[in-house]
Image 1 (cartoon, rainbow, N blue to C red):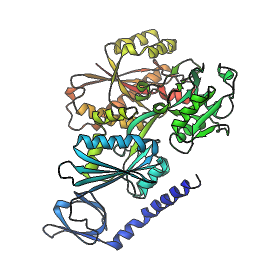
Image 2 (tube, one colour; image 1 turned 90 degrees about the vertical axis):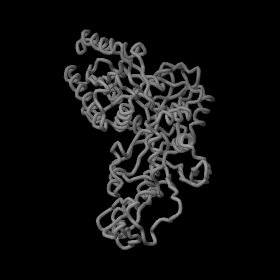
Image 3 (cartoon, rainbow, N blue to C red; image 1 turned 180 degrees about the vertical axis):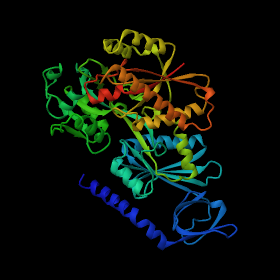
Length: 525
């Protein structure tokens, strides 16, 4: 920490200075002059980027993007007249950069017929050179820097990265700095997307009888307040908690969503391991240990279910992670600046949405975002929760109406969730809007009926919750429609329905349980 944090701060300070100094520097440098073919228009300024098609120049009129086919370029900053080679730098979370994105770059090259050369750069990461299959000419160079989420944002702000890999959302400070630097609003869907999914899971050794704990109990273990398995219904034996560095990888997510959310502090009894592999090995050797790790790197450890005082539990599985029903799901974010990437960069981004890329993601061991369906008969636990929660607030006839509505339909694997008490989508759900819109435009649901069905937590009056969940379902439908371009609405029937608190996923006695319950599901028939 004493070595890394100053590096990040230095680059963040550099980005802040760049916001205030870049315009004056550009006006002084004036190292390119772009002249229209007829000589009637002339622009002078500082060349920021050239992507093989467009110049991006900081001029006295502001930052302008100019089509290179309509101008000539003079000055020391003009690009070489030789074949254009796109340079793309991807920086950020080690978990994503070490396995997932190398696999995606390789899949992209294979799909598009490029030859590929891979080179490991000591202390940096991986350099991929993409070559035309026939001529062998270089087309692009992709550099994947293995850093951290924080360093990835620092690289973006200091103009040293074109894409950020992050295991968390951009902070308010990072968003403000990006906006002030002319990089756009990182909250916007076009500048942030979910590349894949993983989840935080507690694991124990095979043979440990404890298979279910609550979030509050989990936090208490890592805070040193629960120290013996007998306090959880297990053997009379001391608990040894393990995890990775809290400042790297999934550590910040655990500290925010479990430790800070429960109002406790991390105990010095926690044993820190450098990698997920050594965590899994530690649990394999220690019958009384518990470790926080990721679902995709759990090894032979047994995953412990998360539950609440009401008795509802949520098990981590690919299905529950993909639908984000599991409360400690970790979206793996890709952030982009608001500027035009080279054509091959735009093609790479388009590739990430394809079924081919989703297949690569699965093969790399992560949870993909390919749209799948689950029939009503596979919803046993959820239906049991609905029956258990029925009573004065949710009458039998409303449960029967829900079953009649859903019978014959299949639940889509993506869900939409909200900030408490509002119709504002959270960051993963904003990415899901784009996913569903693209599937609609591609004809994936032609001739089908999509039902946007809202559910709520159990706080407040049942009828009020039903109306709120209906407004949320309508808000999701409207945001999906707003994403569609020239889409013939007769191709797909879309309808709205809502059942409020009728089918809870988790207990309402905690913030995480309520957030899981506030959702809009998509059902297809």
